Image: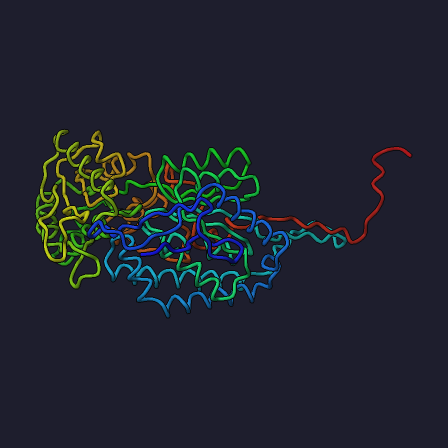
Length: 500
């Protein structure tokens, strides 16, 4: 197995300046299946310099909008062409099921098409009435410049697209650093951008660790915007580094997301079945390694026992295994470190009085589930309370905590009792209650009688420590632009502020 040249700078695929490499591990069996370049500060500097030249001297920022949009659509078509290959790569890299990998590719293609349509459908600017026929005043939007992007390991391809597509649509150049744990599909995406005809230097990638490459992308003086998706601790460091240069910053950080279920949503067999099914989806898709995972079930006390008992019964039937195996519903955690972190949270909850309803251990090995893989059973912890670490901190594993409420006000208080504010859901047949809850819950996305869907057209952001800025939707494009006010006096006259 030979090392790939996974650093792309100024149109060339390169090894790291230092010659360092890193093995990429398949989390299903803990065996390496690829070797990539392990870049460092020198590689980051070279990539930023290439992006700076491409923005200041290259054609991309002034390329007509129609041509930029056409390139984004070509990328979407290439993604469709390579759907199976890239979906498989995402499955092996991140541990998710093959079907999840395919869906991710579909969503990425949708994002590129959406931003192509959005940018080409815009007007020439917003005219500002200056109160005189002799004055022409307009607000226009221009690309912000060199953008650096740091993406997480759980949805590497999807998160990269949410940054790359609007940045290119707006006319920017960029350097991206994917997670050192799951970089392969981002490398594949850069290859497709090159194939689609993007000019050299516009798209650059440096594979390497956050403490060197990521830190340099945040503090380099030639960078105009830093976009980061990941954990709170790392995001805080990125914001601090970027602040020294007064850069624009977009941060999408963690979440501790409530899934609030009222008794009326469970009044019929169909309603009960749907709410249980969606609670499983909220907590255990991609083994809970989702920033918007519904890891906090907040359920009305009168239906708690029935609901949790059925939830545990179904959770025990979830088929764990290698994501490429037929019938597998849930893959491994991404790393040994992530599994140990999950085990720590479960142990802490049990010590603090939680009741284990299912899971709470590593599964028995099987043909689809090698003993060396980083698997952990879907786990439900009942009788939790807000002082527990498992309730307050982001686990990023297949762990669901259960809290109860009696009144609507108590449900709101529990849902909002978190330092995060990324997403949440409410289940009820009462439309008035649904709207009240959606208005009162302090989270960036509220789902009503559903969990996890997102739309490219909608903004994605959060309250509290879930971050700043917006992705997707028109605001996602606006993040990668600067507004400029052009004021033209058609009949200039002397001002004569001073004598003479």
